[in-house]
Image 1 (spheres, rainbow, N blue to C red):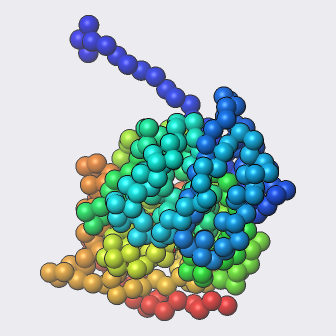
Image 2: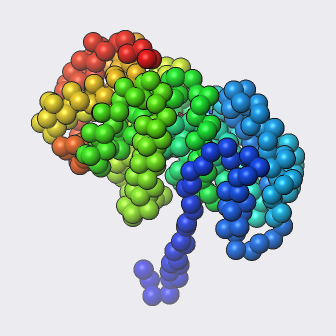
Length: 392
Ligand SMILES: NC(=O)c1ccc[n+]([C@@H]2O[C@H](COP(=O)([O-])OP(=O)(O)OC[C@H]3O[C@@H](n4cnc5c(N)ncnc54)[C@H](O)[C@@H]3O)[C@@H](O)[C@H]2O)c1
Ligand SMILES: [Zn+2]
């Protein structure tokens, strides 16, 4: 620095609650009005609700409860229009025109920086609505109501938003911490099987690199997840959400300025599998394969015991995940196309490759070079698991 240069330094504290409830809009539930009261200004403001079309279709009664709830409870927030239905799943993240329609809606209803955007949906819809919300007037208050297991234990509880462009996952987006996250567990009842188990792969991910006891519990509960045991599912959601939030709050890099991404264990492959399949394979299913690939690599290099690798594969399969898809073994010019995911991941990180692997169960290590032969072996060894355990 030159003596006369100006140095700007400031820090901004962020805080938001992650709460668990049931039937958020039933007339006796006050959680949302408690969330509004977190605003220190206590001024009368506006609110707009977006609902994932998958939620609206599976539970029409849910959207119908919102108007009466606001009439009864929300003295400090006026609902500006009936809930808007938004396309659900990956398609909403693949089309920037849909994101701009969300922006238009927020401007049309004259939402200001003190207004609330309430987004009820899966991780993809939350990423899209969050992205639009973060751009309008440079950021409105976002209240997320995650509606899938994966959104409740991972996607909905963090600080990131985004969409897919140029054939890659999350190539544009923003960091925009929510105002509050309200996990309504009753929403999970209507999930189709593949999305009911979807979040369990993210739980195995975080357990394998951070919490050995949680990993063992997940292995024990795997068949319960498959048979739609709500107690086991809710237990893993709370524990997994806690580990994700704890990581964001305590690792010193909530906005990912460094090059390590521990919570992206298994994700270089998962993101590539999703895009190779043109998003036919959902995120949670792709993460299950990505974990098996990177854990298999860790086992080959002696970082985890064969028994721990076998426990992971069994846990994922007992949950109901398939660990092989045609895209996983597809070749281009002799090489597995999936391996291109390593270069994509490197570019996303910003220059240097840094891949997280388990180092014993419950611990992690970062690696900067990958032995492509060992990685190819690990990938191809999954071919034997082409068929998933069927739902109980
Ligand atoms: N921002 C982050 O930090 C973060 C972290 C992890 C994952 N993600 C993203 O999350 C997305 C995956 O999210 P997901 O697994 O929640 O799937 P999803 O959002 O794609 O939803 C899956 C399907 O379920 C439907 N649905 C949602 N809730 C429902 C309900 N209660 N009943 C019936 N149907 C319902 C949706 O309409 C959709 O068709 C990916 O795009 C991934 O990249 C983001
Ligand atoms: Zn993920």
